[in-house]
Length: 466
Ligand code: PHE
Image (tube, rainbow, N blue to C red; front, side, top):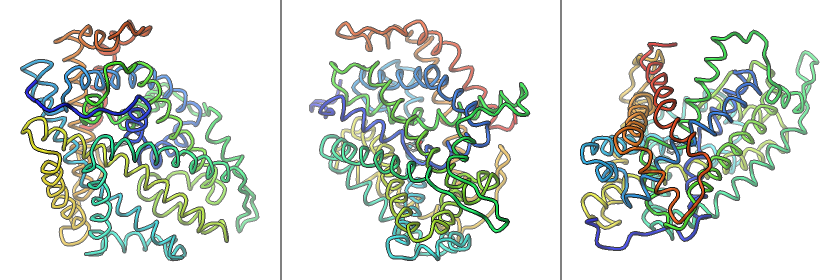
């Protein structure tokens, strides 16, 4: 390999697992998973998700981490090392985090703003829906908060693999889990009577979440549930954006990749599951079933502040804990996005970490400002091929998540399944005599099932299947 200097490595497998889990656990776990679970028949969705995690997710995650460790390269150069004709996949895998990072940090800025609102006792103002729209359409304030969030990300990445990413993940992830367990437990104790005298409790909300609801479940509805679970899982485990390749390249050869993949997926699924236990009972108690129809920004920045407000005196305190937890989740994800690009520039152009970080920061700063202005000076409405209407942020999200990511993931499966052959990955995984009992499953998934399923996602992105 051209890189003469020794490559940084994660100190141990725990550091790697927490860093990768930190990437995987993000806004998707908190604002999309619970909503999908509530919409898609509770336990039915959870079951589909679990099965997919053990098959589809397992194949993708294993492949990417192994590509990283095998080549010792970050995405921009790793794919080319696997096969000299596949460098284009690496370029795409590096373009994706470059696109996502700026808008992810813009949303990170919104979270910081709400955290600040709750900390400064401004929680009451945050209850109004107009507070959110007023904030994101303002000219300067969103840019300011975006810059603060970006700066925190840059700080961690700049400090490097051990002193930055690994160290922060090992501190932030356990705190995040404690916070989410605490809030979820509190959520279950809630009870509230509405104006019509109807009393709802957190425990009833828990039933909506956990008990499979087969009412009106037809074959086509079940297919919808499976596709929802698959697209959620795909986004949630942070594959197809070069991240797991970059993180894999920092893993020592004696780490058991099979165990690591299991633990990363377990962690990610656990946090998503707990997020549902935290959000569904709380929203159900105070807003009823209709409240459960919100996801994304409107769940986090409109519905939940209303719920915190309805909790009475303890509400603002729960709000602080919640937004702190979300800040940690988003920060470890944005760090991983930035690292995928920074490491790529380091490997490809032989830049020092400092230079590479500065370049990526400047690109993100400029694009992020355009994203912020997308709600103000540069406002327009554009209907995307999948039917949603959006601004700059939604366009970047569409191009990266819905188009480029499935393409990169399909290309990865073809590269591994058919061009290099699954053996190239199996050899890496079983290095040092490590047992891999799901070999046959892996080969079947990577060659046939996973690319076919990803193709479905792509068709959905183009609006060909609804
Ligand atoms: N996996 C993250 C989530 O579930 C998504 C993500 C990760 C986005 C890394 C960007 C970067 O929210």
